[in-house]
Amino acid sequence: MSIEKIVEQALQDGYLTPSMEAEVGRICNTASELSIEEYMALDRLMGALLTGEVVVLPRKQFINVMEELVLSEAIARVAEIEAASSEQSLDVGDIAAYALNRLPPLYATTEEGAHFQRARAKEQLHDLISKEVNAAIDRNLVRPEPVNPTALGKPSSGTEVLSNLSNWLQANAVNFEPQP
Image 1 (cartoon, one colour):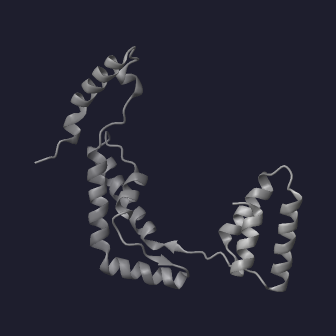
Image 2 (cartoon, rainbow, N blue to C red; image 1 turned 30 degrees about the vertical axis):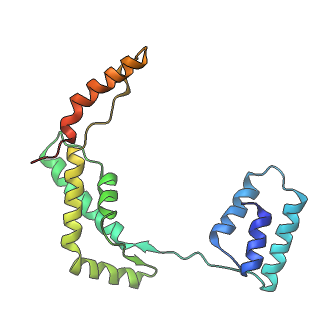
Image 3 (cartoon, rainbow, N blue to C red; image 1 turned 180 degrees about the vertical axis):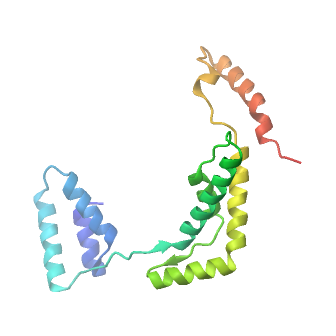
């Protein structure tokens, strides 16, 4: 979005959002030179901000308490598993993301709110958090190894590509079969 459009939107709405402010800053920082129209738009915005015609919406800081709870649980479980088996290597980020996508968010904007959400989650959601982290770990343990690009070789023709791909899929299909 251009500076002119952002200023026009701010004047129409009566407020400048943090994302609009960031976009204006990004444009100003990356442009080698601003046009006369851009300077005029910025001047209009400054005037509107000074008169109160446009107000800047404050950046609201918030946290998702569920993220810290899931990360703590995932780190503890991964440490247990890796201590028991030196050949197991798990990605905590993948595990946390998988679990977080299946759990409700617990947002808070104050420390008091975060404390409330933590207490609520420990009381009501601890078993669900553990269940989802364990499911994420199970999923992470059975995922196939990433494809080694050289495993398919350097084929010279389309048929060779299909043949190599078919061979690779047959060798790795066991990882995708449903477990009884």
